[in-house]
Length: 258
Image (cartoon, rainbow, N blue to C red; front, side, top):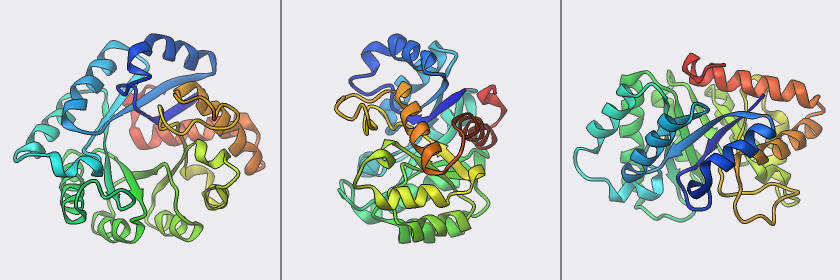
């Protein structure tokens, strides 16, 4: 069994055909999907999908792109959702994104820290989004070293990967690892210990080879990333599938049902 540990089923291209998307995922051996809410309006849709389909689970957070949009009191709203829904397994995605700077960096950092404090209070793991901001994100996480977390869609350097591993992070690898120009991601993926490795699609984005021409990625395609990683790490595919599934179960807990 495989798990797509990070996707966005509420986004255009997937939300219109969720039942068919899940059927294709099941045919590929993907039997659990974690769909991630990225802003407060998205959270209602995410929770509704988790309620509607047994194989869908959820994470709720404020993506750094949306940090400037939140209004006073959002923390209470988010925390209540995290406490009161059995299929919400994590806080996130949250973090820092200095590539686009859609939200001011100071605001990003404040909203990020607020969510880490919520995670500390509710006792849930965290899904991090970090792009071109590893130094600042690492410095913040050192104040929350007791939290369990995954750095999703890792695109940093091997040295940055090692710094995250030193903090106890899980590392999420997407279809980017299959791209010819992804030397840093490939090198990082090789050095991640087997018990810290996650695989994910980040669908509808980042279709892996050999389906990279597909504009809409989907959970079934996590199998291509898994097979590439198995070859890259010189590990049998079944062993990698079993280990990454076990890693997800360890981070997200028994409510994942595996």
